[in-house]
Length: 425
RNA sequence: GGAGAGGUGGCAGAGUGGUUGAAUGCGGCGGUCUUGAAAACCGUUGACGGUGCAAGCUGUCCGGGGGUUCGAAUCCCUCCCUCUCCGCCA
Image (cartoon, rainbow, N blue to C red):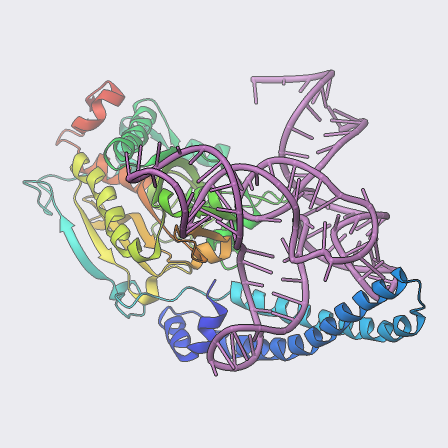
């Protein structure tokens, strides 16, 4: 949610930011409603002030045993006027809030302006020692490797649930579990995060709080009977942990990390990049979430990225980081880095992580504030989150990069204490 | 699923139709005392909106929504949530 006052004072800046994000802007409509609202407010408040005064007078008269019938009769019409105006104001506010809920966050000044993913900018790249983009032998892709070693079963997943619901088998399941545990442990022990194990179903208010709703509602699963949503990312429950809360300045920054399964309908995206793990309806992810003071949030964004990078370095997986341009930014984000890992079989980079700063956009929606120690006014926190990381795409890179010429898969050193085996095949 | 209790400020917790935005306590802030700190004592301390250069004026808010009334934290309706007991259950 953007600050209404900010929109009022900087309409052109807001319009430009929204345009750069390829979103539709409602600024003019919002401002005209805002104007109408304020005019009505002034009228109704005048009437209410009168009512308050007279009502007190009635109390005084009655206490004194005097007759107040005349002014009571007079106030009746005032009451009716108030009700009518109140209704009007409420209607205007409803419309305005709806429009505001559909208004995206603005991009940060440091974000390159661009129309689509083609305009994203590479930020940095890291390659393991001795790595080459040229394959010395024919690399099997992750689906072939999964089938060869019987560690992934996409067909049976499709049978029991539908396409895009992978099944992990044997050492595949163990490897997946090892990855999750390794990532959690690293963030907890090296990066100062507190572990959260969140609910996987959340209510509508939570989905609104982080901005999945209303715009992305079609991409979300929904349990209609209870109006609960299977989470598309642990970002939702973890950020909403502090919804409607007042935090203390001293407890900031708050760093949480949590594993969850993630559920996405991926409506309308069939056909492209849909092989195996490349696009799935359920996957596993370790998510980092930060609640920070506004003045630190861009420094924290950089920290978030390096925290995710440490995982990939430890796993020895080639990756690059790109800065998303304005046109590729998600609805709620002000700035976002994607981390992409290399797939030698697909011969391309795969998005394995997104690290975003939402500034106070989510905090405003979810009403997450903090009180400054020197008794200043409450202020909205800044929220950030980043995948650290999603196992599905990561697994693709891990399997493909670590395969030997005879098709076996070498388990990265750091995972062996979790898997208790060092090779698959 | 059945029965009951309850949702009030940053927190705890009074308050059942008329200066109650709300007693009291804790916490926060300022001060007195102290070499310093603690304790004690005194004072102060809600959020959000409208208007105004400002001082100020003003409105709304006691789980959400609706209603009764000249006037609602207080009465009525409805929804949500939490807790306790019983039943069922991984």
